[in-house]
Length: 469
Ligand code: SF4
Picture 1 (cartoon, rainbow, N blue to C red):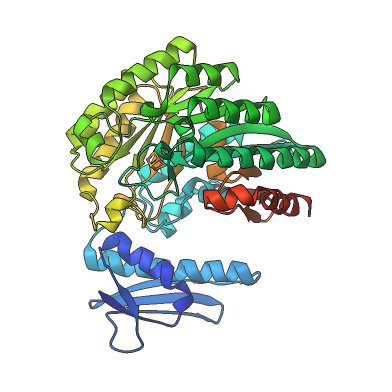
Picture 2 (cartoon, helix red, strand yellow):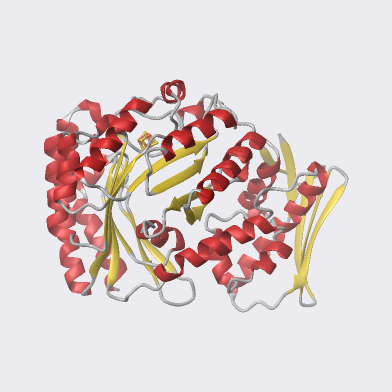
């Protein structure tokens, strides 16, 4: 437990996030006297300053301040407070975080806001040069995809069912083994929402740029329902520049489902091992084996899929850097066009977090992430999108790697927030990206599958209000 006194309680979450990036602290309690840490912020004579004191050390941030408008001024003040806390935590712990003081989810977007000025990131945010070089490299790969024609929009479909629940999962998914009776009303409602969205697209005079079916595990639907969903979505929204299905887990993929995807024009699929260690897969509750992954890849290749993504996670419980390296080698032997390397993030709601499981050794996770980057780039894969999450082991990142020409456009669109998104299904978040000022507005679908099934029309109305206002 740690007590905190601050004159900026509105930035409590950001202060806590920064403290926890350095130290594992359960409870951070606000108090007004005898606190372990104090954080103060002020604007005086055109100077914005923030100070943080902790265990006899002082962290300071200070810079000229010219507030342009209210939201801008709040953002600058929040940054000042975070940087002062970063400074004091670094002095106290003698640690330097892999991403310095950068805590945002989208560092590439941040670099672009600074007009590609990596020197500012290195100086102001203490970003290590290798990370700013990585961001600059990703920015170069993304460049051809960042200008979105005005009449294009991405469409995302959420299928929130999985066969078993992975122990690190914090998503809202429902057990597909409970049968069709549970999933059918969902698919029926999805088609009603899809009909409403087709009219909306017509009214907006927009065409579909990327069509992405994710989840959950879309292939967790029974073959009959999967066909109904896939042909229904294809008839309403295809063709698109890119058509992806996150097939995901091999225990849900059948030859018939692969053939359906192929005949519907799906050109990207995921077959996600997460690990190629049998005992790890058992430990984290994934009901498939490394052999099933291999068999699934082989089948997908025979059927003609030319872009397959494979996800791996660094930092799974019980895994050593050697085991991770072995998994990476085994996945690379399958020659996926995309490999996405995630770092384990234990969020609230996951079984592991609820059971009080602690993070993996950050130094070892760092070795895994570095090994993946070096090995994959040596093999010709390029990092093409990157994002970070809260609660991520060791404050690292998730990176999507692609062989040239196989970059997933939807992944870039969603991470860089460059394209409007129409999101269908329970929990879907549609986004309208305004052309200037970084303004983004959102419309949310209800989360529960039963609630969604009875309120699909309302989801369409919300999207109409978002995009036609
Ligand atoms: S496959 Fe993905 S969505 Fe499904 S339980 Fe595992 S982590 Fe969660």
